[in-house]
Length: 159
Image (tube, rainbow, N blue to C red; front, top):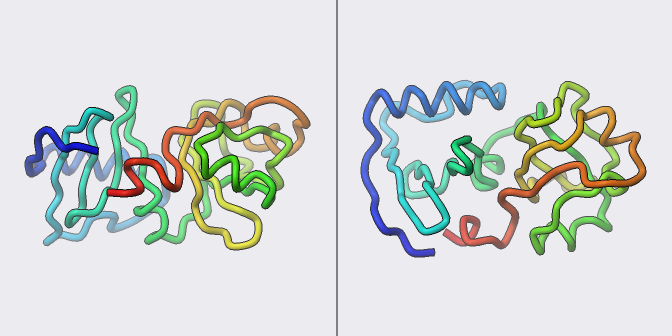
């Protein structure tokens, strides 16, 4: 992925970023005071870098956390758990289908930003947008439950 432009975030932009990520996840002290926070403009869109590591990305005007950010945090809310059979498909960028979901945060609403982990290791595999609420994801036996935005092995992961 080629970075076209890269610049430091202004204080106002940084405050907005913290608020937006705080709205998505129950995370305090997301960004340390002395951290270097930059915005990188690429052909894929805008990526927020924290000390050179991708923290979040902007997709369709919404901020999504990256998997590298999620690996650093121990977050319970907005989490969806899939069976091991779904992992190879997720690693190739597939959307998450309801039959592969074995657990989900019941507070998830349609349109929420969610992240997907496997049932064995509980490590983040993808980030996406919920297409149904958390309870329905677990109960439904057919259909697409999550539209994948970012996944292990994509260009942002490789940064």
